[in-house]
Image (cartoon, rainbow, N blue to C red; front, side, top):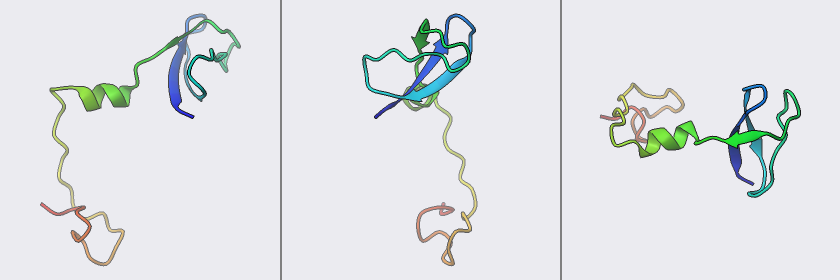
Length: 74
């Protein structure tokens, strides 16, 4: 099931819920079903034409061969 982001129009609380498309969730804070589906912030950043480049960092430290997996290689 997909993860959807909502904002309650009654209390204003944002929340996420795993559910099928077409089902309206209830707000976990106030139980209202007056909610708005939000655009995922991950999707907004990923699709933005002006997204900042990812910084190149050092090795992740997760293995004995830094850079071999692509992490930390320049």
